[in-house]
Amino acid sequence: MRNIIPSLFCAAIVFASCKTAKPVQYLSNGYLDTAKLSKISIPEPIIQKGDILTIVVYSDNPEATSIYNQMVSNAANQSANQGAAASGSTVSASATGAVPTMPGYFVDYNGNIQMHALGNIKAVGLSREELAEVIKQKLIPYLNNPYATVKIQNYRVTVLGEVAHPGVINYSGDHLTVLQALGMAGDFSTYGLKDSIILVREYNGKREFANIDVTKPDLFLSPYYYMQQNDMLIVKANPKKPTVSVEQNTRRLSMATAIMTLITSMAVLVTLFK
Image (cartoon, rainbow, N blue to C red; front, side, top):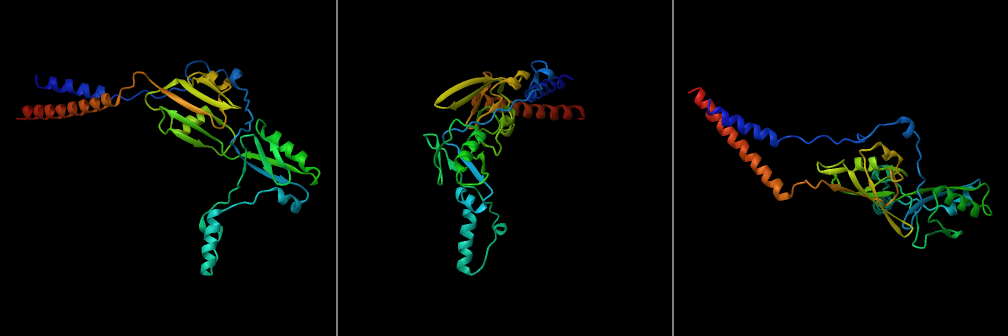
């Protein structure tokens, strides 16, 4: 009986050291009031310097319209076709697995884009619809019933700190929420603080900071719930997070305790069945 007590004590230590962390609790600090939170207001992305825009022009004159649209490029297909021409064969896009891409209009650091025959067009600070309207008005003298569509190609945000997969997130849509960004980054790590996330936003030559708390339902009412292109999220670490050396020592202690428990248990079994 005396030999069993040390064994049970060691086993208790092992189980305590293997205790799993509590799951992340989102939106748990407060009441989810449907009446208060039901309204969805999605802000329109604003074009910034350094953005790359896909702009497609349409009108009742397809041939005349084509000069205002960029040619679809496919570097992989071009390379494959060049090789095929040298060998006298042909290669299709489906055979190469390449996907055609639109080159895009770069918003320069004066905030302008340059379109064929239209010259410089101020784009920075406008929404996609506003820029499309500007382009439409400039095209009216040249085309019948013209209109344009505008899309931001390089919509991306950065998530750093205590998440599973920190880094840059490229997003094909126009709207990304804080919760979606955290999900795409693999969720919080064990020591990530859910109520202390820093959002850094740079726009129009200014930088602003905001603190985001994903434990409160009021998150949905925050002007920072929907992220803008080039936003950065930084998830802070719990001050109690152990250092690398502490974690290593804890693992070593757990391993040593487990070995001692195994040896003690074997000794107890030998004693009992001797």
